Length: 288
Image (cartoon, rainbow, N blue to C red; front, side, top):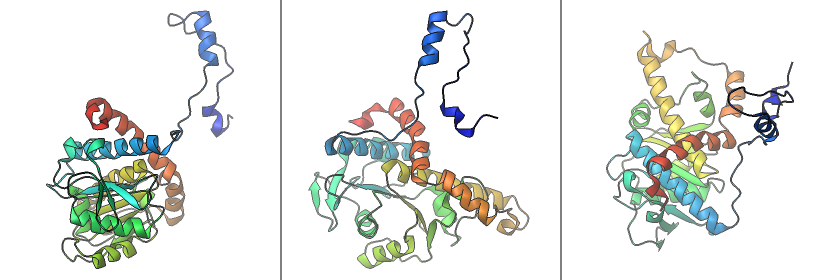
């Protein structure tokens, strides 16, 4: 039996696809290197910064495409690769569908604008400054008022391991079981940071979802996946006579093992790439 890793190796079998290639072309094709997905190799902080800004802009465009924008609510941030005490964020009032990489604003943790000429959402500053200060590993943080995330948050409960996808968040998301209004105070930001802990995601009761990641790609993918997991659980519970009590849960051991496969940084990063390529092809101006 072939090893599981053989899918990454070039076969030794010699064939010619009749009608599709010549013998010379077949030989060349058999020698072509296998391209394995890898994290991008960026040569300096400037290239890294541009890359991260483009990824964040793509995230906003995708959220608009999915209908997850809600007026002026919602924000994503990432730490600057050169100045980790500063972070880039969308400016206040700009439609997600129009955000370009060059539109992002650079702020410090006091809320002062370092680069840019537009103001930022005060709630964005309060939430994200607390998260970035409390979680040095959190390069990117994502929060917006998506439909199923905010609907699920009204239940005041965590996601259950009912699908392979939801296992990514098994024992790796928190619940902020309170709602104190729009997040305008530093104290409320501290409460959110405590509730998040060392998890990758947080359900804010009566509010919505928040995710963090070690890359921009991972944080955005976690949000997309978590929103869909909320939708899946709501639909499944609605189809059961006894609601959530009838759901068939994946066992603790299997859920943890599955989380290691589908919920880590590398898996999340690569899950985002097809969506990124799609939205860039559809809306190339986001790279500007």
